[in-house]
Length: 134
Ligand code: ECB
Image (cartoon, rainbow, N blue to C red; front, side, top):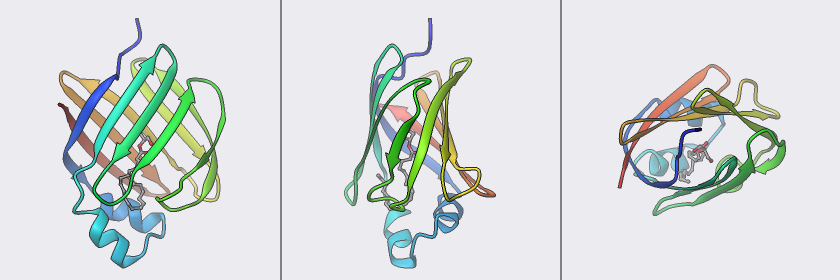
């Protein structure tokens, strides 16, 4: 049985979010606000179908996909670039490749105990975040 990511998850730690935002070309003022945020993730999983909401006091982001099916991703409210994204299972890890203008862009989500891990990548930058189940 595959992992179940469903639930509400609150950010506890974030490492090198600044480097990740710099790689995406996010401006100074936006970075200053964004790095203070403690986003919450609300994940709805039905088999291989996912809705992931990342919400904060500043901006929200929604993505919906089915594992293995490529989709057009519009990173609205983030860096604003569009990419072609596809999510796959790597054992119990959910791995997204975001093909577009930025090289080596993507993310990996996985669960350990009551924690949700997120690695987000862009070019040579990696940001690691941990969320705790609400
Ligand atoms: C939506 C809350 C964060 C808002 C930050 C606002 C401005 C910063 C602009 C760009 C930074 C790029 C990404 C922000 C980080 C989090 C958003 C989604 C991270 C992600 O890839 O989550 C995946 C996997 O769980 C689902 O979208």
